Length: 199
Image (cartoon, rainbow, N blue to C red; front, side):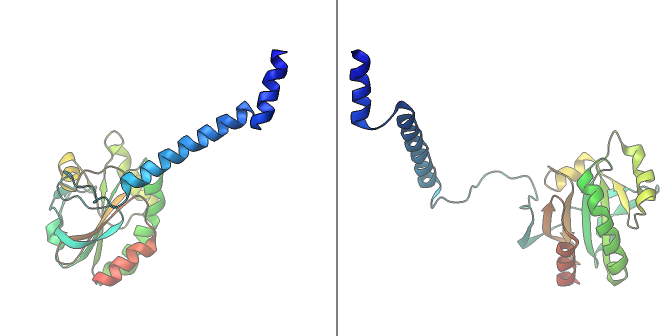
């Protein structure tokens, strides 16, 4: 008898327990979405402490900042000082031999060096290899890298805002100022657009 009363009650409301649960869940999700939208509408961009020389990823900078100078050992036993390259457009590429996106992007950098090297463009590869440092020179030979490779250190990583991911690249104009930064693999056309604007 009780079961009959229960089924009659369910028929009266027209909703099963499962349907009610779906309604409650939908209402809860809707409420969360509304609160999220209200909380994030019209708010100011986050302002907080950023690392020195921090640059937003993959965005040209509205105001250029002087590129932190460095004097780093090259793969062929010399040293390379960034400030010696003033007057050239420079692409700095933080990379490592073990990084698949880095390896994928290197042929583009080689092609850019071939195409624009005589027109005042220099590319510097800053190797972040530590345990695999002995693989850098064989890697250069295998890939036919035609631009200088230097060995990075914690000082240069920090001076460039802390390298959070590789590849990370910086575009430097002829005056020695950073005008753009890209975190992650960048297409050759993006680099070429920067080069054409700066030459």
